[in-house]
Amino acid sequence: MIFDVSDYTLPTFDSIDWQKTKEQVGIFLRAYKVNRERMGLPVYPKLTSECFLVFREDLIKEKWKAGQELTRNEEEYLKTEQCFVYAFSAIMHPYRSEMTERRRRVFFYRYLYGLSVPLVSERISYQKNIIVDDSKMAMMQFALALDLLVFL
Picture 1 (spheres, rainbow, N blue to C red):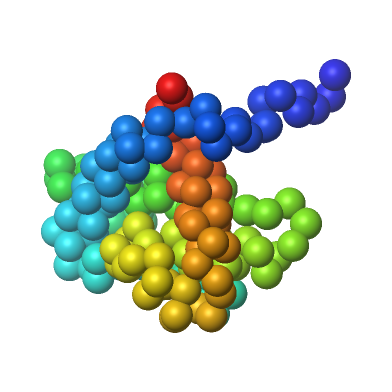
Picture 2: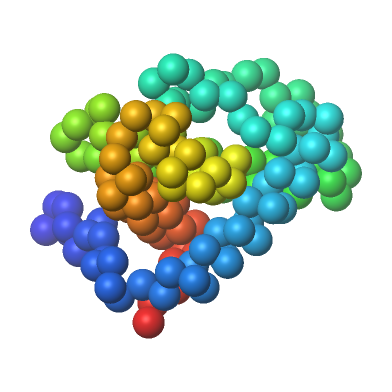
């Protein structure tokens, strides 16, 4: 078989231990924010209006590519930055780009900014039940990409 669909099939919502998964993702996000701040960067990465990450020149990555020795903080920053980019890009809808954008925006507001469902609903003008569903799907896709998803 050229492409094994089972390698990419998402689990069902009811098979996930949401509390433990959120704890795991929370630990990662805390480390990600701390590492960005230690490098003198804003805690939150920049997004385009379509919710894609804005790639910027990364002096630490250039230093690493050049074979220069990195400090422990720089190594930790690179590791969490690469993981975040990998996991955030995994938040995806297969057919509708506007749903990908909305899910990423919901993930950003809920789990990076820490906004409540009603506030996110108000901010992006969608019903609360859609925000809840998008929150779960985005969390699942993000956690699955980093192998942080905890099953019941």
